[in-house]
Image: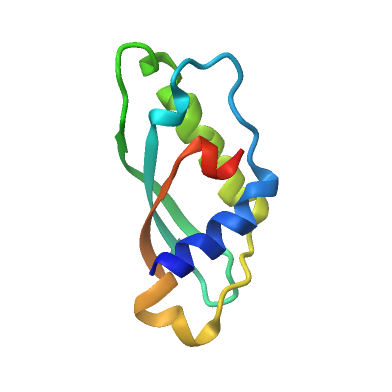
Length: 102
C-alpha cells in the first residue's frame, strides 16, 4: 500500500497549492478516505482525520485539508496499476503532509 500511496501523491503533487501564511502546517497530516473508479476518476474523497494540529497551526488545518482535497480532484483521473484495483486503490485511506505535496 505504501507504493500505491506514493504513486498517488506523486500524481497529485503538481495540482497542490500550498496554503500561504501558515505556521507549522507541515506538522499536519490530513487523512482522506479515497474511493476511485477503475478508470482512476474519483468516486468520493472524505476527510477522515487530521493529526498534528496544535494551537499554532489550528487556524490553517481546514485550509490544508481543502488544498489536498482540491488537488486530488484536479489531478484525477489517476493512473494506477489495474491489477491492484480491487482491495487496493479502489477504497483506501491515505495521508497527506504539505511537505510531501509542496
